Image (cartoon, rainbow, N blue to C red; front, side, top):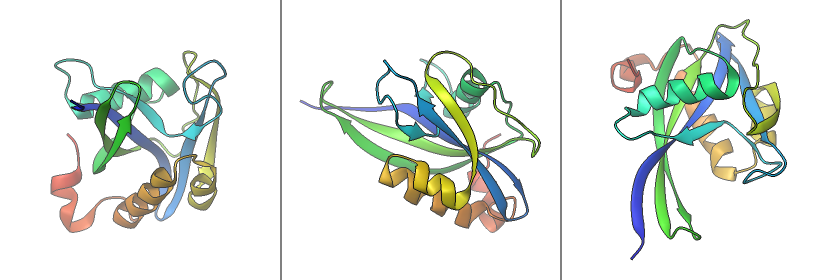
Length: 155
C-alpha cells in the first residue's frame, strides 16, 4: 500500500521592496537527484522538528541566509514512484534583507540567481512551482498577507 508522508518543506526565498520581488532560484548540482533542475530551497523536516523551523534551517543550510519573515502559502502533493510514497510538501515564502546575497553551502546546488518574479517563473523547472510562486506573490506582494497575515505568518 502507498504511504502518505508530510515531511518536506519548499521555501521561496524573496527580497522585496513594495511589490518588486527578487526570487532566489537554485540549480541542482550534477550527480544529485534532479540534476540541472532549477528550484526553490527544498528539504526534509527532521523528526520532532516543526515545519517552520525546518524551513528556516533549510534556508540557512543551503544558502547561508537567515529569514526575517516566514509565511505558509500552501501544500503541494506529489508521488515518488521509487518509494511508493505520496509526499505533502509544505510551501513557504521566506523574506530576507533586500540587500542579501546568497552563499551556496553544501553540494546540493551549483548555481544561485536572484531573478524577477517573471524570470523566476520561467526558470523554475516544475510547472506547479511556477503557479504556486505567482499565487504567493498575489498574497504577499505588499509585504504581508493583509487580513490573513495572522493565520499565514509563521512565528
